[in-house]
Length: 269
Image (cartoon, rainbow, N blue to C red; front, side):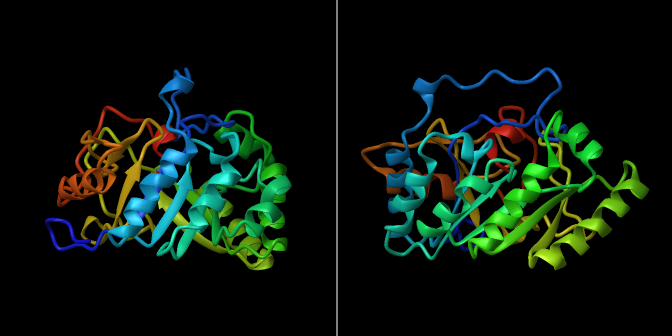
């Protein structure tokens, strides 16, 4: 379907949880966050119902995100539910990869079409610092398990051009070599601040220009979000899910501004 600026909106990102097993410096404040209570989180069946309604009005791509989606209990069942929806051509996932290795084959068997794995460095010390305690070996194991299972893998590399340029250049060079060895694609993502107006950049592959935006987001709380850089949301009406989706698409601005209502950790980028 088209938004008010003639953009075709076809892509639904589903944040299945605001929780994560890492505390990445660009995603979460140092003091941490208060998790949304479990009784305020949508059921997986309700999330699948939103995806079904979206497919019926022209959406053909869904991406499961978090927080970290693999900390959500029974999230693999959601992949099966999504793959059963007529019209959905792509059912993908974005993950930090640290919990992926044991379930990669199951995800592939359930029909996951691809996986993006957040990986900014291969250096164990720098990875631990950036994730506040994560082990890069677990993320690497996730990459390799996904490839072994036949899943297309894309590495998401967050860069901050104004910080530690030499270090980041070395990390990116090593990651490009690693991606080539493992048969992965790679994309660079500019580190962004949701409290500031969105800025397009030719130096990184993401975020994409606002003029090309084709997505809306379903938050784990049941709110649809038309733009990452906006406080606007639409609460899903279970009696008219398609109407809620249309209302969200109608709210998409020509370009993102700023938001103080949501953290990156709860939206999934």
